Length: 254
Image (cartoon, rainbow, N blue to C red; front, side):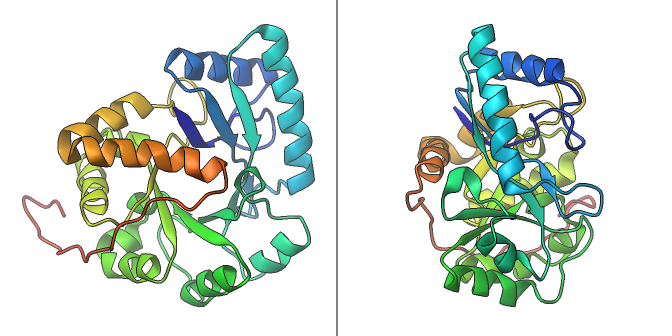
């Protein structure tokens, strides 16, 4: 398995605090069958700024330790950048980092809103040659309330990535249900851990893929697995025609 979203680099955001924490996360990942991780520290989110070159340097340092410790895991450089108006300029100046130096770029929204300029920025990123990937849309209260917004972003070429713990039910039934709706409506394209540690914010990828297989079948299961490989290789990923989510309330759940 490949995990394309993980806060495994030590001491630079709210993920691993020390190199020992990073190694513990790496051991846990390897035990769970994860062979490759894209390190995606936070950037431009009001608390943390982690620029591309520094991420690459720290990724190389971690890989050296993994090799020395005999941990069978490869870490690739990436970044989880909070959406901001200068993202394209940041990409061109080498401050914002695509995932593994591909065309794919993580875009994070604030947890309870979607900025008004989002549609235009996502379009402009694609014109500039990048493919935006909206991270954990299933945990954004604005998108839960107005899923049509996400449909429009995906219809216009953006991709999305749901969190493994969301699909596995670790953030509650409401978010799990919405995550499954996103899969069903072809509104998401990747599952990733967004792991921050080995305890409160672990990997849960095996549980998520099991849920995916049980709820959506083998075709979806293998497509999501393949998409992570296509992404790190810089290839075009599988995407199906997106559909609208019909909002239904049942016992207070969407």
